[in-house]
Image 1: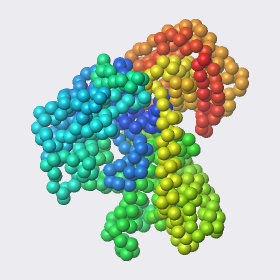
Image 2: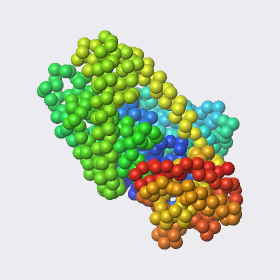
Image 3: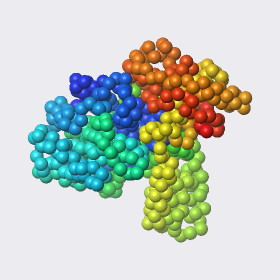
Image 4: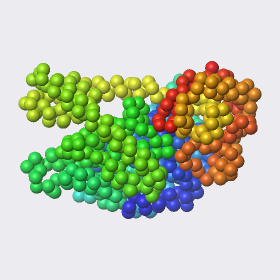
Length: 602
C-alpha cells in the first residue's frame, strides 16, 4: 500500500467514526515559544485539550507535518527522520481509553490487515503520581492480545506531557510491529529489542500537572493519537528500510546519480575493496542527505517559512543544509560540484499534490538553498585556511582544534581526519568527542532555559499578550497601512513578538502613534467576544486572517468591541481593561519585506 492510500484510508476510517477532518497546521507553532517546530499532531490543538471548544466538534482527525530535532543523531538508520507526517485522531471530552484502543486495533488489523501475531503493546506501569494503567491492559487482552505481548513501562516510555512545566498530561499505550520477515517473531515481547518498531501511540490526557508538582484529574479527559506514516508505509510495502518507499526512494536515486554511487553493498565494483563498512556508511550518508533536504524544503515552503540564520528555526535550517553538503562531500563530491537544487526540486515534485504551497514557493525555496550553499562554500574556504594554520604548528590535531573546525567551519570529524591523513598527522578523536559532548550539554541547558512558558500553558500573562497582539495587528493597519497582514507571532509570559509585511522601518512618530492608539482602545474597556462561524462567512464579515495560514471550514472568531475582528484559536481576556498599558520595546527587520515588533504590557 502506497503512503497516499494509507493517508486516505486513515482519514476515511476516522471520518466514518464521526471525526471531522482538519488540515495540517504550520510547522512553525503560532504564539508558542516552548518548541521551535510543531513536533506532533497534538501541538496545534493544546487549547482544545485544556477545555476550549473546537468549531468542528469533539472528534478530529488529520495528517500533520511534523519536525523533531531531538533524534537528529539517530537519522541515518532505517526508521528515524527529522521531518515526518503524523496521522492522528483526537477526542476532546468524548470517547476515552476503551473506544480509542478499539478503533486503533480495528484500523491496524481490519483495515491495514496487519497480523495480530506480529503486534505488541506497552502500557503505563504507574508511579507515585498516577496508578498503573490497568484499563488499557485489560482492553488489549479483551481484543485477543496475548498477555506475553503486553509490557508495563515507566514514565520515560509511556507518559506524555505536559507540553510546558504545567498543564495536561497522562499515560499512553504504544503499538509495535515486528519488522524482519526473515527472523521468527518471538512469543514474548521485549521492548528493548530493536526489531520491534513503534508505529502508533494513544495518549490519554487525564491529569493536570500543577506548579507544586502534583497531578490532579482533569475535568475533561481527552485522547491524542499519533501514527507514523513513514514507518507504517514501509511495513505495508514489505521494507525494513523507510528510505526504500516512494517517500524517499526518488530522492535517494537523485543522490545516487549525483554521487555516482549506489545505495547498496554490491552495486559498485570500484568500492568492493573497501569492504562492507564503506557501504553501510554510504547508505547512512545518503539517508542523512535525503532526510535533511526534505526537512529543509518543508521549513522553507511552510506558511510561516523561515530562512537560514544563526538563531532558532533558521539555525536548524542552516544546520540541515550544511550537514547535507558535508555528507555529499564525504561521498566524494568536490565542494564546487555540489548543487542541491535538483534534490530540492525532487522533494517539491514528490509532495506538491498534497502540499501545493511548496510549488507556489518553489522559487523562494531554490533561491534560499543557493544562497546558503554559497555562504557555506565561503566558510569552507576559510576553514581550510584555518586547518593549514593548525596543521603547520603541531604534529597532532587536538580535540579542541578539531571541534573548532567542526563548530566554526562545519568540518565533520571525518573531513578533518582525511585532511590530516594527507599530511601524516593524527587527530585526537577522544578529545573531540569530549568537546562535542560538553557542547551538547551546554546547548541542552540553554534550550531548557530559553523555551519555558508559552501559550501551551495559557497563563494569565500570555493570555493578556495574546489579546494585545490582536490590538497591535489591527492598529498597524489603521495607523500605518491598510495593506499590512500578519506574517507570524510568538508570545512568552514576558513579551509578544509580531511579524508583519512592510517595506521600511517605522518612524518614531509611527511607533508612538501605534502605542497611543492601542492604549486608547485598552482604556475604553471593550469586551472580547468569541463566535463560531463558517470560514467564508468569517472572511466576508471582515475578520482578519494570518497570511498563508490554513483554516478549517468552521472557525472561531474573536471580536474586541467594534475595533478588531480576527480568526483565532484563543485564549483571550474578557475585557481590554485587564491589559494595563502597552509599550513597543523594539521594531526591526525580520526578513526581506517583513518587519518585527516586540512589545510588553506594563
